[in-house]
Image (tube, rainbow, N blue to C red; front, side, top):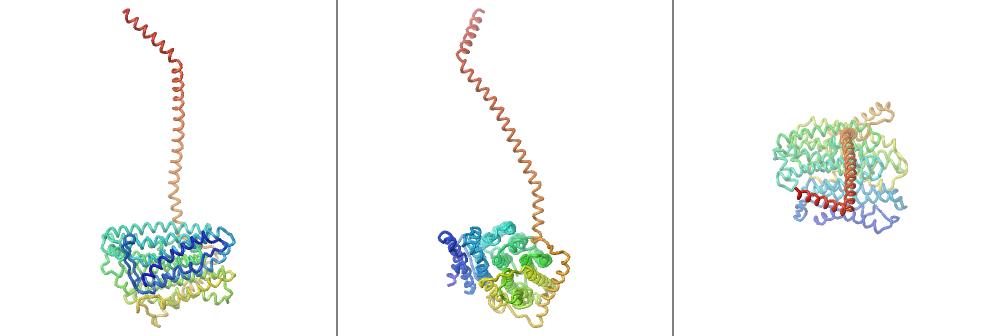
Length: 590
């Protein structure tokens, strides 16, 4: 049964993509349905697989030898990933209803955009599912690369200039990340002669240059996880991507980088070397810098999805710091990782519902406004740790840190949660400023409501090991909840202080523009060299042509001389014969 579910989990999205291609050639555009029930079901087998229990598969005929597994880590990861993909697909069915109507009426641009999205959506999902269950390097990298490059269609969908810029930034960083991942995998696998992720972890642990291998892989996966410095595609891509695409990008796909770290780093191992521990400290600092830096920059954004993108960077910075603790303090990792998985799952559903909520505020349903805004705020309040699963997930990571006496990190994470509260407050305020009437359809708001419920109740449905998650004691609630009101207060003070700016804001993408300026400055001398090469080439061509013309002139004259000689050959021969005879007679007389 598990093997059948595994096959369906991987083949069903592939079949859905095949059906999309078949419909393109067999169904007239006026009757074509891009988001059919079959398309919606692409993630359902994977969701069932996550709840089927633990299992392991070995396939010698698969590439270099496949090893796939469902264990205590991959099962909950697959569960929240497949659930979010399913809800985002339902949301997409309502979100693109108007665009589908245009395509059916003969709008070829809408038809092309929807076809591209409908085809590459299940392929992106397929890559996401494969990398979660993969335990060998080849399968993991195949899934990661497929998910990465197929997701380009999710970003560039609208085709506007801003969408092309966001997709360009995403693709450039994706190529950089893939190169770093491939280099790290080849180095670690070659050092240990292994083909599995377990072998990579062992190689990094014992190799002389293990810290450098870890750095390559962490930076490569960090592109997807939004690590500071490589995060710049997120605030450029999210504002231009459709809301359901932003939901899976920020909720599910960004977690692939986090899972990559957990899969390749020797977290929790007692024999972590000093260079690896030092690298863990650098990773911890980078995570905290992202948590605070993204919050400070994000509150000045005007687009609500840009604010939410910086919120994702901030939250992923907190998770980066928690992963780093597996290297800095290995003894805390066995207690910490279940809480980190819950944190990731709750963030996935909460952030997914927040991004879906941006489309709700753009097409407000005919409900009382206080009810709509209360529902829009719920996942943000939970994300800040004030209610529901957010409260439990914050405690699940703080409790092990308390137990192992890492109070300073707890304090920093609490203040980072203040930044989360401020960001979601600003995002809601921007949504209020940019709200529009119009009425969302039932698929659109239905998927949004289910996502909110799933975010608030994450510990109830997530298949974590029994007893690994506990409700915080009542006396700890205030210590977990205080960042939310403080963050809201900071957001209000910041709003008052920025009133003199009269609507001006910092550009989304922050360091992207610095990188673009540096690259542009580097290209100036390269363009000059190129211009000089062009001039040298032009001069060389002109000289060669002039020389050729001169040689051809000489050759033409020689040819004319040859023609003259051929015409007067008999006379010349007679003259030569007379001269020779005269010479002979003269010689004889001597």
